[in-house]
Length: 323
Image (cartoon, rainbow, N blue to C red; front, side, top):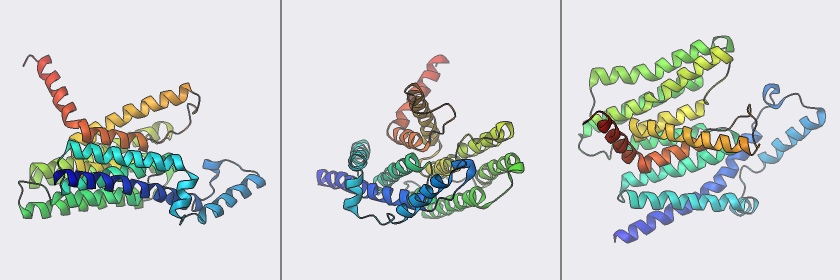
């Protein structure tokens, strides 16, 4: 019976990944069709180039409902790669963890990461609904946590949802001029950090809820602060807010240890990719390389091997201290 559940789990992962390849193409078309002309982004275009830009927008607008078969024919390599990644995600989860509702939530998370990686690679954007989906998975997963009461589950789920929505409203909806950008991002970092921190100090929730609340702030807040410093120094953003919101949502689902490990592993993967692209001269030193795909890989590796890495590092520290 267990073998049957594992087979169904893997088949579901592969099939959903195939559907995501079509959603990827449709979402790309929607982003491009809604893109506004911006001199700072596109540069000063000639009349002919401007007409080509508008024609591309109109053509992509017709593909927002592209049929499944057409999407596969247009990019068979992307479709095959999505099937492969869906198989990797489902097989590795099935044999790393037991088949359970919590495992299904993790599979949904990994499949969402696949879609995020593809879209960010194509458009250098992480759609907000995909991060919202991860936060919803985090809230849902609280109800399947063992060894805590129903009241703690309800309160924990509510607090995670409240802080997640509050963070995103502050990051997404608060507008300010570039003159005050550095200072306002500093305030945003405080807003992401302080409410969960104060709640943990005053309420002292169960350890599993505390772990997730720390996960929401431990990477997101420092990255916003780094953005603030970079803006004051060179008027540059070190990290996109789509990446930061992804880390906030992932922290709510995975907890702080896996989120920190996922971020650093993603940074390593991104660094290796950047060096390879520079050596092969596919990107210049000032070209933007999307961090989302590397971050998704890092989060996957943390989910699969994060506990072993923490134990390994802890053991090294103990030995270095003579314990």
